[in-house]
Image (cartoon, rainbow, N blue to C red):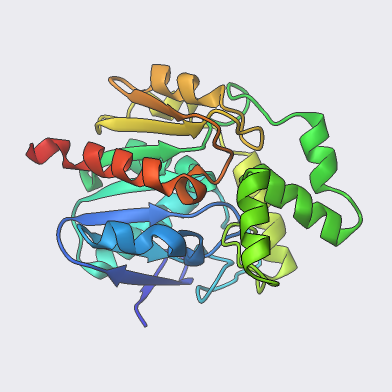
Length: 267
């Protein structure tokens, strides 16, 4: 079980799958490496794919300190790359992972080949925040109702129904790490909410692809053109009908799209 060590001594668990050029996959807020389980093998077929547990999740350490921030998570990513002996990698981050990926590319440009920012945002005050109705749905006192609201923000009703018909207990990989301690969950929420990479985005030099679902209200689609305009030379692709977890539900579209972008440099 590979364990890197962050600058503050926190253990950072990661896994490497496949072979070829390195590709780092960064998960969403309050989620472990399991976020990528449904599609990881599709990337590992072509790349040496690295997935990690954020501090506070999975098998990484769970410090109850002020060490949680999106720039700090980016330094954790670099610590994992160092431990794995990887000098440069493609970086693909979704949701909060996309926020972290912005800092990896801006603060550590020598470590990033190509950058993919999925269903993410530049952060406040320049980004477009989710609406009050979304916040209200997620803060319902009934835990089951709040979970259902999150599920419906991630996936389309038809896709959810199909999985519920197929299994009495369908597995959804994007609803948070169930073993995550409450203090870490709060700190993840605060870190993501405080993200503001607007000025830093001007420093990104890696070729960049911005991907978003057209029906994403969890992290509104309007953030995609903001990121595209802010990162020099960035391109944008919107996936029609997709919600926040476009990379899983619409993998037949999203994965080839990303793979084609990553392969362009060798074309």
